[in-house]
Image 1 (tube, rainbow, N blue to C red):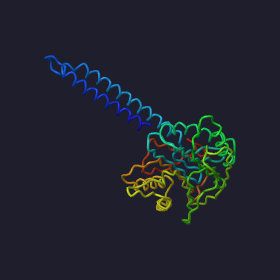
Image 2: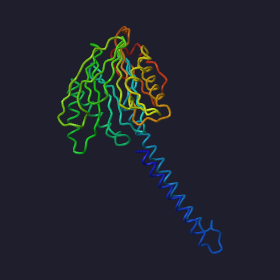
Image 3: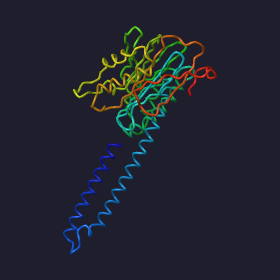
Image 4: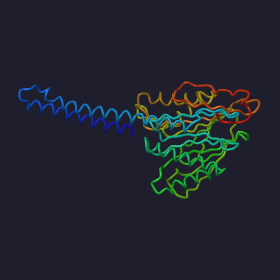
Length: 338
């Protein structure tokens, strides 16, 4: 959105400059003993005023898009969370100010709801649909305890929209910290990777088609046990399809290797180290699609005492890892968001 609008403003500025040139030339040709500059001053002033108005319009647009992007980031909070034996960290690198990708971690009774999504398209339209889709997911996740049923309901409501619904890929899961079980449904997102403590890799593929594509689509769900040291990596296709100057894609093999290279680190360190590996691979080539990554890691050693949680929302993407802040003693009375 901002890119296309910038192009329109550039065209307008170019037209104004051409108009200024023509007027200056015309005034110079028709001047009767007066300097051409003196004759063209009123026209130059008028064009400069229009240019100033265009610049002000551009500044307002940029500010509005920036504020929308900040709201979008807040909707995806928390960006870092400790929940009992689990660490969760997520981040989005949008190719434009607004992203069609999103993630969300939310309390659903005694479980955590974990969502990673990718809406087809980029910029303003995808960003507006994102807020609507996240609201649907939250409501359906609270209504249906099974992830497959919740995803099916989201798809049904999207397809019932009179306007053409967006096509979106979605991974939705419930994490039970008491049973250490993750029950999930994958609707068209690249299969998340489950890296076991012994370095073996599993892919979470059970689910169904992308949302908004087929009314009455059937969805299945799968479940996995998360053992100490296991780590789940959920990501959008912008990560594995990121290209370098040789037109090579980052691909899943490099993603697995990047995660294994920092095995044993906390979720936040794994997150930014992996995103750093993707951007280093691309080098001077800017990503063509939004990059989204979510890491869930079960600590190798069990925490003592009652479960506790603390989340941290980062105002801007960065690669430097931050440690999970432990709650004060007075806060250690159960799982909660801050």
